[in-house]
Structure formats: C-alpha cells, structure tokens
Length: 120
Image 1 (cartoon, rainbow, N blue to C red):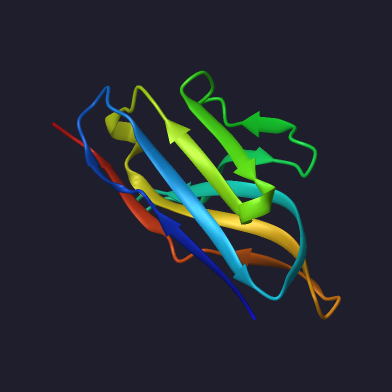
Image 2 (image 1 turned 180 degrees about the vertical axis):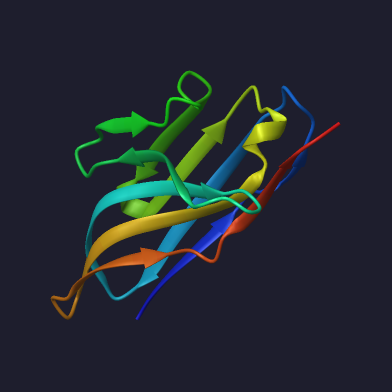
C-alpha cells in the first residue's frame, strides 16, 4: 500500500512564500513523474508543476518564475517552493506521483490535499 502525505500549507500574506512537501511511503519500487495540482473553490483541478525522474520540469504559465518544483529521490519526496504569492494562488494543493510498487503494479497516487490561503 502506498500513501502520500502533504505538509507546509497555511495562511500567508500576498508577496509571501510557502514551501509544500509531499512524502510517499509504503511498498514503492520506483517513482516516475511527480506533480503538483491545485483546485480553487468552484474550479477544476489544474496542473501547477511537474518534474520527471530525470529532473526535467514544466510549469503552468500562471506560476512560471514564482514557483519551483524539486524532488529528493532518496526520500521519495517532492517539494513546491512558492514565492511572490498572490491571492489567486489560494487553493487546495494536491501532489500526484506515478510509481511502480514492489508488487510490480503501476499507478497514479494522490495526496489528501493541503490548503493554501493567500490573504492580507
């Protein structure tokens, strides 16, 4: 069984910073892409940033230059450094990982979601 646990969310003022973490645990053999999504109230869940197993990254246009995704393969963890936060960044943030289990099954797994509020 695989579990993803997110941390680091909260309330921050516009222009501030937060760092989200998402750690995977359980019967993991390998992890491919790691991604962060977000969902604002009444809106669909959108991709924010992604990082491949080789370290290549891509970002939504709305966060380019402000957010940085990174990963620590030894810890099965993905991070999202968020700088220059804006009120429109307010959302529930979800991590997602494509991984191979030790039982040789491949699947996409989701974290439980963590709230980020940007407000003065």
